[in-house]
Image (cartoon, rainbow, N blue to C red; front, side, top):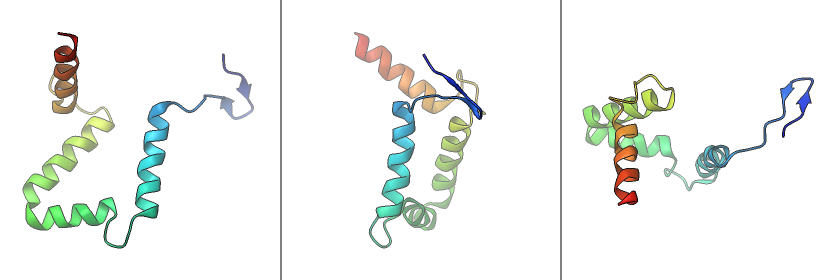
Length: 86
């Protein structure tokens, strides 16, 4: 049960929120040249089309711009979930 504050509902942190905080913490605490964006720079130099394609799919998935029936990330995890049930 959540209470209402003057700024809106008080929603407790969910596991997904901690995952985002973990990503942020990793990037803030990473050794020199080891941040996620610097890693992506390396991927971009090595395989620009593949790196940009993967980053685009991840972005579109996270902002729910791809319908689940054609979202490759959603489909992959749905298939893995079905396989675990067997």
